[in-house]
Amino acid sequence: MALLVVQRFYYDGVRKSIPFVLAIVASLLCVIGVLFLVPAHGQLIADIGGWAAFTLFTVSQIPQIIKIFKSKSTYGFSFGFVTIFAMAQVCELVGGLIEKVPAATIVMCVRGLAIYLVYVYLFVKYRKKI
Image (cartoon, rainbow, N blue to C red):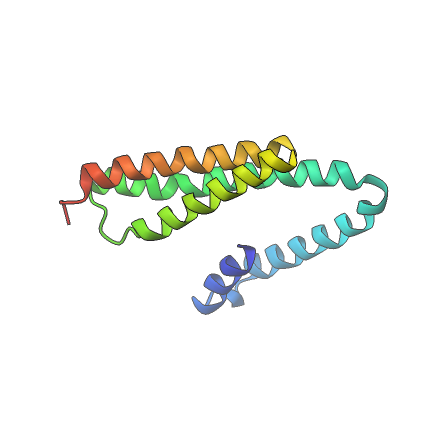
């Protein structure tokens, strides 16, 4: 996901801006720093990473929901993409329950399915207003 963000800024010409370069350098330094901590604190790093991913994925969906709600239109909204994503969440949830994965993974799957239901509602409500 971070790669997609970097590519977007790179191809939009933002790559020459100092804040963009500083953000990339800071991200790389954080990743390198975490790699040194993994041998001693692997489980803690995994827990923090899991909950951070949960938070970021949750926040990343909000702008699309707001856009659809404000415009009252699903124009440009890929319902197929969201449906495939929901199917992946179901598979991950089933596998996670069978394998007894950490709570963050289960909660993220349930969150993904809840967001999917919000998208379904918005799609049904606004699909004819293109």
